[in-house]
Image (cartoon, rainbow, N blue to C red; front, side):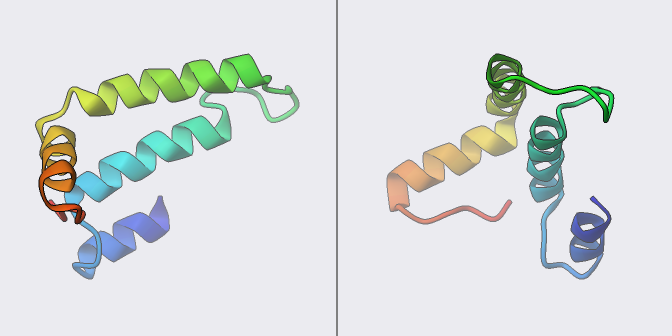
Length: 77
């Protein structure tokens, strides 16, 4: 997340890029799982679903989806 914040300060990443990066980091880290615990596939899928559902409810994500479907190109918002 430090790198994402640095990229945002440099204008290389948008505020919503930071939101998406945080969601991905949450899934990849297993969220609040202890470092000594193993995270199973079902738990990771549940985390992914939870974070996806949060993102898909945001106007910025919906704008990105609409733009990609309309133009075939990503929207940097």
